Image 1: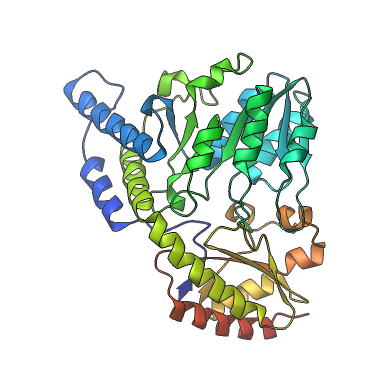
Image 2: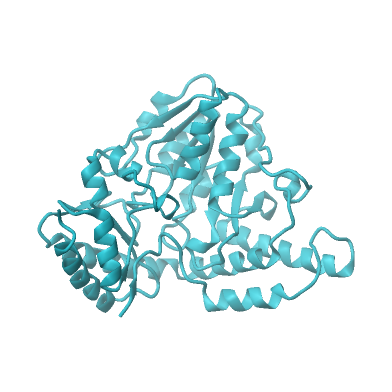
Length: 379
C-alpha cells in the first residue's frame, strides 16, 4: 500500500482538467498571431482568464499568467525592490520571496525587514505597523504557510497597508480550494497563486495585480521577463494556452467543492494529528486554531529527519520535511527555526499534507508506518 501525504508540494492532475487541456493542446496557433488559428488560441486564453477572474472575484484584465508561484513572487519583489524602496516581509515566507529579497539586499538595491513570528508561526499585525518606514513601498506576507499551515490575519495587515498607502502582496499559493480567499482579494493589491497546488497542471500560475495599485504612491508593476508584449507587457513569452485552460478549470472545481472539502479535511487532519501526538516525543508545529485543513507538521524528538522520511517511504508513506523547493539542502527548515525550534528539532520534523484522495483508512495506515519508521530513525 502507498499513501501519498505530500499534497502541499504538488497535487495530481484532475481528470477533468486533463481532458480540458487535451482538447486545447493539439490546436495550432499562437495567441499573439493575427491569423484565424491565432485568434482561436487567443479566444481560449482570454476565456480562461475570465473564468479564473470569476473564481477570484476580480476583473480578468488584472490577471497575469506566469509559469508558477516562484516567478510571480520574484516579479513582485524585484519590481518593488529594484526601485530602492524599503520592503517588509516575514522570516517564514517561501524561499521564492526570501531569496530575491536577499539578492536585492546583497546588491545594495533595497533594504528588507524580516518580521519574526511567534511560536505558532503567526505574525502580529502590530509588528507590521511598527516595521513601516516613510520609504516602505511593499509588504509581502503569506496567507497560508507552506510548511506548517498557519494562516495569517491578512485583513488586519491589509487595513494597515491601505491606511498607509503601501502595496500589499500576498503569496496565496497554499490557499485555493482549502482556505477562502475572500479577505485576501479584498485587502491585497497583488496575489500569487499556482495551478499545481489545486489539481491543475504544473508550470502555470497567475499574479493578480489590482488596477488600484497604480494609485499607491505611483507604484506600477514592472516585468520580470522581457522580449514580448504579452500580458499587457508585464510578462514576455509565448502563452501556455493549455496550461491557462487547465488552471481555470482546476480553479473552478476547487472553488466549487472548497466548503465541503475543507470540512472533510479538517476532520481528517484533527484525527491524524491526535493519533500522531499519542506517540511519545511527538509535538505539533503551527497554530492549533488558525491552520490550513490539510497541513500536519510534527517534530519527533530525537529522530534523524532524513532517516525518518526515508523509512516512511520504505513503509509506504510519502511525506516531506518542508518545502519541496528546499528539498536536498542540508539546512534545517528556516520556518521552524524562525518559530523558535532548535536546529535539531527542525531536522526532526515532518510535514504531512492531505488531499482529495486521503481517507481515514489511509491515515490509520500512515500512523502505523510512522511508528515503525520512528523506531528505526531515533538517534
